[in-house]
Length: 183
Image (cartoon, rainbow, N blue to C red; front, side):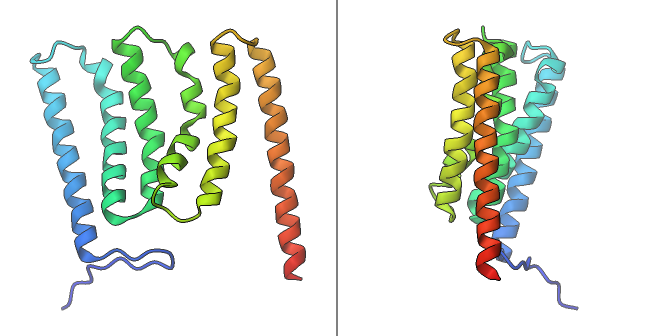
């Protein structure tokens, strides 16, 4: 019986070596996470276990996605790493430094921009990634201005909603234009 070790897809094909590398990365990061949890639980590192539990878990998931995506040249995996990595970094900054969620929340809004900015360096669809960077980067800036007390939060929300409506109209125009071109 021949074991099929190759993943097939209409979009991307992974070689057996890439699949093996992804599995090794996942196992390695998981082992490191468990060792980290044990070190903290037994008191070698003097932090409260529950203060690092979720941030460490998010960091491990994001690191696994980022490293395996880089090895497999899978931009989707790399992109998906950042919705885990950014919240992990924010949690650690808020738990162990002098920062607060009220100051760092624009980074949550910027997650798609950060992810696309990294993907734009090696992935296809550079124009699409650039549009995501611009849209979510600007959205994050609107809220950053409120954090910096340049404008009130309600003004940031109004500008953000207006900008989002413009984006929706742009997308609808593109959709209707492309369907009429195919007819």
